[in-house]
Length: 169
Image (cartoon, rainbow, N blue to C red; front, side):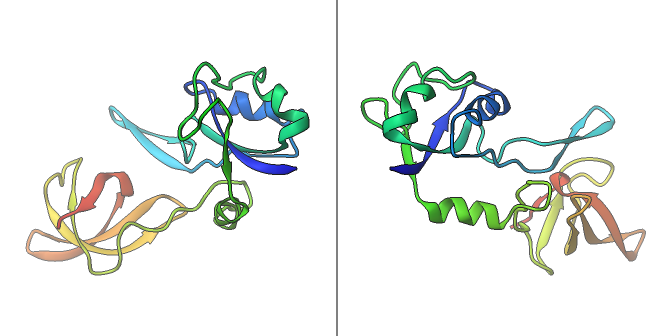
């Protein structure tokens, strides 16, 4: 019987494991997100996995399971999370569909905004560090947010990277 399984991978080897599993599996889901990472003064676009060290594979347990042990990038030295006797964890089709519904055309999962309009937020980095403001909206295509801040006695709408903002509550 064909079912979805959560597969634990070697550290930072999700892409390698996904590629090797595609050879024999019915379907492989390697959900990733778009993110930004700040290093020194540069901001880099990155594509980390939604679930680090995990991906999902649909395969026939009776016929293909033995191949899972030999797939490149798959960690199989001890029992996996929530498992006994080293069998992969079965994942419901509903969970897979919930992830797929949030994927864009390029396969990246779109996460819901952490804030709603009017939320009090605090800036965690940059020249406005530790200043509080009001969340106005999210610019999802750029992973930026617009905040309402009081600057020099005037209220200003200013853009910030979403990773530079946290809830003030």
